[in-house]
Amino acid sequence: MPESLLPPLVFAANIIDVFERCDPVDKIIVLGLAVFSLVAWTIMLGKHFELKRLRLLNESFETHLRDQRTLLDLPESFRNRRAIPYADVFADAVESYWRAVAIGKERGTDNSRARLEHAENAIQRALARQTLRYESSMIFLASIVSGAPFIGLLGTVWGVMEAFSSVAMQQTAGIQQLAPGVSGAMLATIAGLVVAIPSVFGYNLLLGHTRRMITELENYGSSLADRIELESS
Image (cartoon, rainbow, N blue to C red; front, side, top):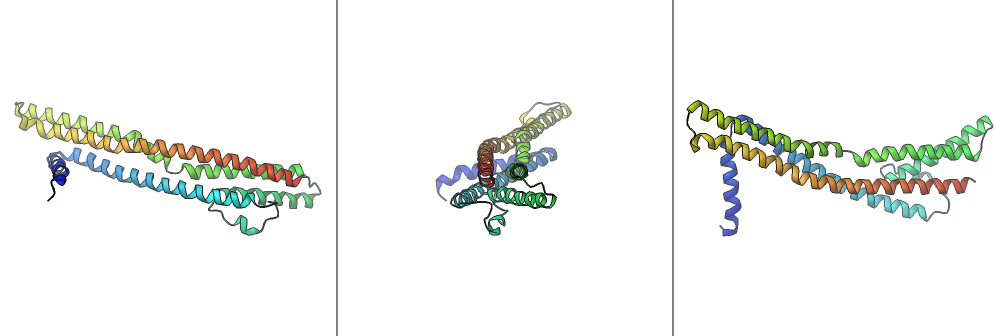
């Protein structure tokens, strides 16, 4: 076996040995934190690739839309791409615009201002819906970031309490009495930090990407409203 692999293997063996000597409460806490770590990494990686994919789709759709001379008379195929956030906003705006035209003609009150207001309201609703889509799973990730250290602290306090309880029962303060409780306490602390530290960095990076994409989405919605206004005047 290569010597470079020995330190990691020794460390892993020590961790397993410490875990086996922990009391049941600390074991449950450490295992729970391991599950939280797996969930956090799943959310972070999944969200990263989702935002990257949506940004590429948005850029492609916006470039295609920019090349069109008119927006209101585009074929229905442009409004059938609801999986793309920009396309979803566009579809809601155009459909609301033509719905207002139809209602206005039926009532004899058709005017460009009413049509534009309906389109702008539809854009705002679509922006809010897509913002929620961008921010999905972020609340759960934030809960892991803030909760993991406290769960680890709970394991720390419990392990120390068990160590002192062992000393009190046996009336001796030897290393044999203190070691299981203290090692369990330290393991719980490490587990809490191992979950929280990567999660907080991942959360902040994802939050920055999400806010930037929301700003881009709002700018797109404003530009779309301007183009519809110019075409309807």
